[in-house]
Length: 109
Image 1 (cartoon, rainbow, N blue to C red):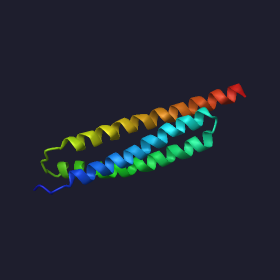
Image 2 (image 1 turned 60 degrees about the horizontal axis):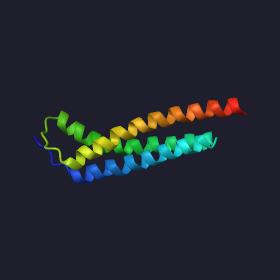
Image 3 (image 1 turned 120 degrees about the vertical axis):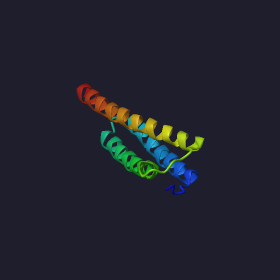
Image 4 (image 1 turned 90 degrees about the vertical axis):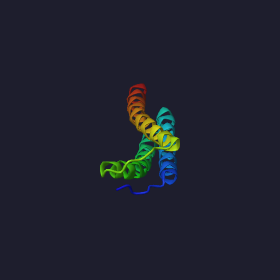
């Protein structure tokens, strides 16, 4: 049984949440570079919260497909998935940059 999903709404939820997460992750690197490690970690936490929202929206589609629904995925949804996966990678890399900047600043001082 196919359940109707609003791919436009789901896609834009993913894009908006992943976009917010990506912005926070990039800004966390900038803060770490300025030796504002505490603030950088706060932004990473915010990025992870936004990613949870994006992943919930994405999971709605995954669950329906696992239940046997068949979908033709629109391009906007593929774009949303691309943003989701890219942002997950950026967050992982931002965490590494924060750690590196923290170590560097501790050695430097």
